[in-house]
Amino acid sequence: MSPSIRRARRLSFHCIAAAVLASLYTVPALADAEVDALKKELAEQRKLIEQLLAAQGQAPAPAAAAGAAPAAGTPPVAGASQPSISAYGVADVGVNSTSAGQGRKTQFSSGGFSSSRLGVRVDHPMAAGLQAVALAEAGVLYDNGVVGNANVSPGINTTPSSGGQLGTGTQLFSRQIFAGLKGNFGSLTLGRQYTGSYIESTGIGSVKGDGLLGYSGGVIPLVGGMPTRLDNSLAYVTPSWQGLSAQLIYTTGSDNNVSEPTTSGSNLTTDRAGRGHDIAVFYRQGPLTAAASTWGVNATSYKTTETGLARKRGFQLAANYDFGVLKLAGNVATGKIKGGDYENVTQTLSDANAYGLSVLVPYGQHRFVVAYSHLNDKSALNKDASIYGLGYWYELSTSTKLYAAWGRIQNNAQASYSLADGGSLVNATKEAGVSPSGFAGGINFSF
Image (tube, rainbow, N blue to C red; front, side):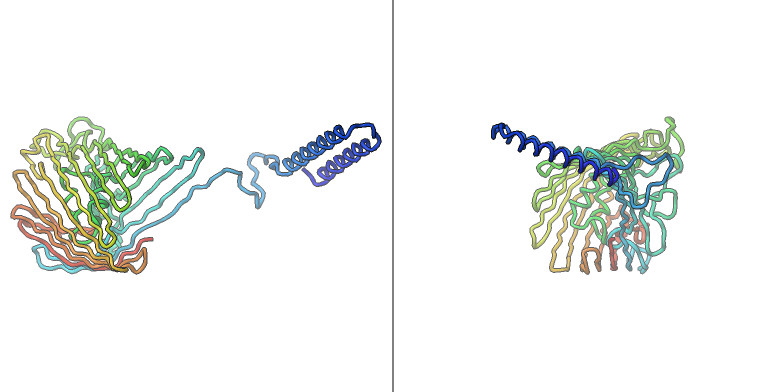
């Protein structure tokens, strides 16, 4: 509304008010009660007119013609929201010196404390408390620029649970990538995602389970073929109630749509490869965090001497308690890999269990870690191993740490497990009975 029209309406209002008040003085016969009532009615009319004028002054301008550009400085429409886009990452560089039966090797490395990565997160608030979310995270190696990835055969997902960083390849976002909705109901997302079992194993059952030489994540997730990440998966995370929450994830498995056996490297696979589920329940209350999980996932391929895909099954319990002066964590897992005659042909970890214990002692900006894990392979191959780890880091800030670690895997005569840090394999063990060990140190910066 133009200012001239607004001034004209206000003038008309004042004229009406003056006329009414004049009439009051020319009619003395009116009773006091009637005069008061008329004054009240006049005040209400004045208030109503002012509200109408104010509303018209705030009304939006007429819509522009189709295709016309909005005027400079035009405010956004009330209630509209814009997506929040943020980048994040971890830069980890250092040096390690390890021995795995072929002499001591010293090299610069990336991932000694935790895997280096680059990611993008998108959050878009909408109506009714809903929020659209998306995330894409790639593993990177800062020592050579290689993008961490899992080897995936075209059309056939042969490694739905792999977190390995094996070199350049087609799977750029090997760590995780998903999108979906989040709200009061919890969250529902689809993509390549972490399982609750792996989160439980490395984040709850260990005080530092995702890095440092000698960490428990090197062997415990091997039990029952525990899935780490699942491609083509739909995950539902419940809201927390009295400290309880849960994650349920289902994967359709392989991208192969051929039902009959097809070649995958030197093995065979079908369209049921990798199909399965993972269920985890979490409890968080004060200094106590506990979890239980179970999984059932088809193998990704099978040998030509086997009759079909094996099924990987397992169960895990984990907990940690923060006493203040120290934090204690532990987990135990048991699992089997059976079906398709796997237990008689391949046999590896067809029946196994494992457990881990670790302690974190904080002292000012210093952190000290002691960890021990044991894997018991109950199959005919009997590939047992124990892992010992010592770790230390100094917190320069909440995001930057200087770290040092020592680790050792004690393989039995039949085992040849390798010593791994947070980001890459360190000198693969090629001979059974060799027990690799090593030192590592560096700087880890999250942003």
